[in-house]
Image 1 (spheres, rainbow, N blue to C red):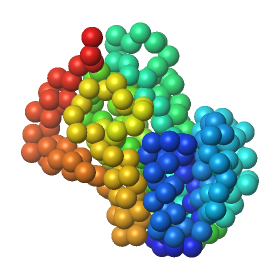
Image 2: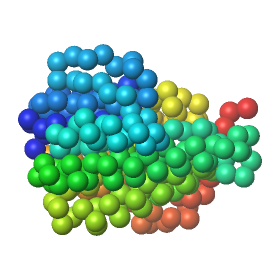
Image 3: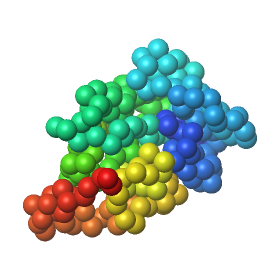
Length: 240
């Protein structure tokens, strides 16, 4: 997928991984990046057009598709992490909220933009996932479950869109050093820029599954001894 001269849309673009992806796409020569966000923090600048976009709001998703009919690269980055386990959640609606954003929001964007990508030559969809999609971390169990759903969604969308020539990329990092995971006690968090660079490289090379940084160790661990990896992830605990 050629990024130079392409038009992209990034959800959750106001901060963290999303903001870094916007910069990486610009550095790779994208002609325009629509920066989607629930708030209007982003400022319009050369080659960047902020748009209001809550991926759980059907009307805003439809409006984005109507406005951004020239999109060739869709990056589904918007996400939420409530920091809740599955059974002992202090917020009983946390799991629902995470599924609405991380799974149903991603699905809504894919449905809205798949025909646009087809009209524009196939293009690409990039879904920002997580290693917790493959190995649950119980202290954030409902987030992990929502990312597992998004991981399966990515595989299914890839199969459905293969015939129209759309590249579907699943980016599967470990924990990234963003405000969203500031209180998750895991070491060696990855810089958002490293994730963004992996997105640009995957698009250029046509890579479908991407494990930025040390995340590849999780993939190898799943092949070697998945139960040992599951026990290690289960040992993480929230600070008291």
